[in-house]
Length: 245
Length: 245
Image (cartoon, rainbow over all chains, first blue to last red; front, side, top):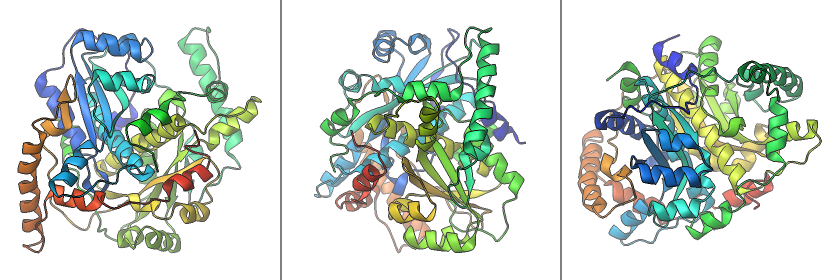
């Protein structure tokens, strides 16, 4: 196993940070690494907003659902899907942009995610830790106003980065055979494997919480998926010109 | 610059492969690395289908828009957003799944992309090269039938992997200041920077094609974005239960 794969396999989300700052040079390394990720037909349809000001982090922490690590991290990155820049390009060449299709939404969302994962890996290679923050979609309209996001831009997720002040255990992933299929989708044996995995996750929580918690993966998922989550997203996105068609 | 960042910054899409196969062990390393990427609230809402059979690759190459490297690569991975597995979890606990919201679509699409980027990096660290294939969305319905994708699963993109038989130049990225913003979205100086970038890209193509091609980035983007692309995606996704709300 080489050093890169070792790093990838050692990933844990870090939610507790020391007070140490991230230098400008270090952050530049991370952003540059992010930019080298692939991009759909070279559109580079994402932007990253880096937040260091504590007042802004505080307000964002509240909007994301009171996640204190957004406030305590050194830098909070907001990854945005961004077609706004492409509008400039169209204007420069006197064409009208057609960006309201679902396809463009997927393209920009994927571009943001690929760049973000490069950023996470680069950060970890530099001794930093971080956690993705889907909570940025709790109040996307307020976040967009705060960060002055123009039309055709939306915050996909945040990423809190800093020097780790914790050393959490890794959370076991689904068995490979459940996630990876050969030649075609075949899941007739998945349920048995998921039941075995439930036991692993239950043991993991029992160990980690000294018995306070012992829920299984399927219990968590059933609990989560029975409720509507962020039902405002479609309307919000359509207001920003996404997903209209 | 450490080894990991060096690898990230050396990325190029590889579209020409030797006939050398990817061993089972090597592919397992890649998939395992993919699984260690972050996942939104631990849903792990993606699946990967690995295609080695040449007949299947050939048919997929045709469906993705006659991209010969899909046929010539050693393994073609199809990354799917997958909520189907969560339905199992709900059924096991007698709850009904609410998965038709845009939020769930974003969650699963991002999960697939984060895992894929880990796979790409792991592959590159092992001496492989690859290219993302958005063309899998050209005929998502046919691809889904072929790969027997159930309801609540859709192919986000493909990834052709193999041992490189080419050594292409890197394509310069947008200036960092265009992509990365401090504290808030501010793009008043972007146009000047994009015009300077246009020159870089034009020079890049001139050099690479010995003068046959010299288009700028904004020309490419204006050309691309003035047309509707894959207008079938919304209807297709809604048939698979995504984006209904």
